[in-house]
Image (cartoon, rainbow, N blue to C red; front, side, top):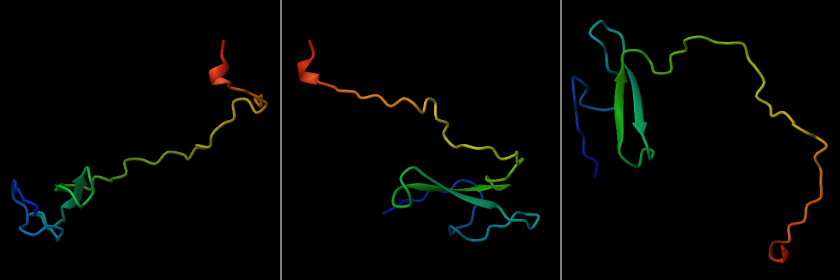
Length: 82
């Protein structure tokens, strides 16, 4: 059975619309280390935590081949090493 601990002025129910004094909405974020089957915290933010600050030009993240001719036969005879 989960136990709830409340700090500050937050709504009595979780995952509902929570309005600021000026009429805007608080952004809700659920924080957990083990998913929703374990303990978690509901955190409210003045601005969304996913706010985009800037967008750069895209770049490739494809892996680069260091040496494409690096095909060499190898034989590991672990118990026959002298």
